[in-house]
Image 1 (tube, rainbow, N blue to C red):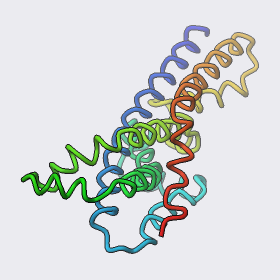
Image 2: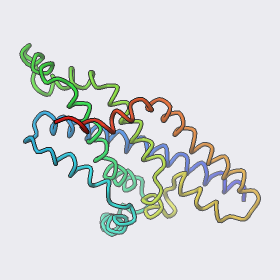
Image 3: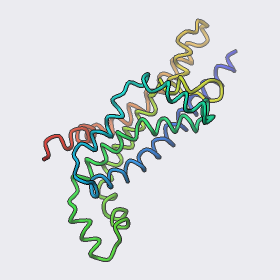
Image 4: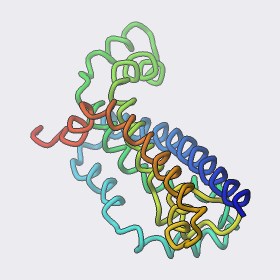
Length: 218
């Protein structure tokens, strides 16, 4: 009935909000400290960031099945914990790559000056490095949120009855023939686009900068 359809749509919206926000926060926090570690304490191997980013080069369909098998063993199928975990796994390479480019642009001398004032390395990064790259941190967070909000493949293979997201619910409505579903489908589609348009507007100036950082640096 219409009530059941409304409940399904509401569940999909809440599921997308929960999974996208939580996984984005986790991915960016881990990516931030990974980026600082690679940029400031790496061994100088320029291929390391590219190796990390290669995790994004695999087609989702190619790694979906192994994740399903692994998550079945861990009882994470059809759970938000599993969905968040896989969202973090697939976006972490990108968050690390983007944040590293912003950390690389920050002179090391600023952090060294803070340590000369008696601050430890970790305190220097927390009080100097992170505040100075807050623009890049915001842009990275928003871009990772876009990836998670619009993700479809993993949400489809991991969700059955307990969890749902907007892209998955929209796919279910596409095959529906009942006229009462068209309005809900249209509303969900508009709702799915609104965050993407807003976020895209705010990060458009940062996006090209983050994607091209390091391209011409030696």
